[in-house]
Image (cartoon, rainbow, N blue to C red; front, side):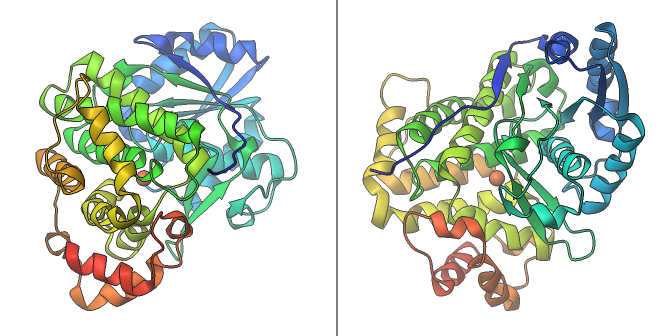
Length: 383
Ligand SMILES: [Fe+2]
């Protein structure tokens, strides 16, 4: 059994309409000035204005940085830092999807510790204290709100840098399911598959431990039981709440057990062929599950058992292949591709993809060791 050191760093505040409590929560921290980091889509949906109004009602001087793009870059972070230097916030609020939350974390690194994003690439590189941050996710996906990592892309090379530091963990994750109802269907699909993959990958990594397994298992129950529901009935608030909580629990699982080969295989697909993260992970995951079965079949069976034990989960037939088929079926229901070819991936580039995938940090935590040849074979199976 793996040893572990488990300390939850993020307070979870969950409930429909909880966005109204944002001001009080920031006040409790003693903050007098806030910088809200958000993106144009979330602003257009009206969620950002609700958060800003709640902060202002509590007497907090609030400024908005609205320059976040999908897969935030070092340029986005630099623009946010410029605003932070002008207004000197005492709390940062990341309000939006993973991009807004990660960008807020990136701003936090540079505003409090100086230097460039690449200085924080890796783990525990920030030497000085960081600002408290509140995350308000509007998607149920990355789980950035419960993890200490920010994914920031280099604006020139497009390389994704994972910058992790316990000090970058959000002080509070404010989980309001009402904010997730307005997501465009494609975002619900992409983020839902990502969250589901976090539950499945963390459940079997070589770092898994009793604490991470508790979060992975509950994340799986919430996500597998509700993903089809939110695809079919986007305004089902209970199902949306379950997805949001599931994604946050999966984030806590990542924090305590890392990820595996599906994420290692996904990153080069995003960097080289611009395949969205959820699609890239989802297309590879069924193949990784079948590959991993040689090592962790009993572990996967635990989840199958979970699903057949009176819980509201879909009944999965056929053992571990049935679990892989379930993921493919979810992709299908979500309108996403189950093959690489329709995603514009060049078959001649598969070896290049494999050489990048093997260098990904998460490849090292896959329960069954993966070589470059293994990863190439997985790409070929998914083609
Ligand atoms: Fe992911």
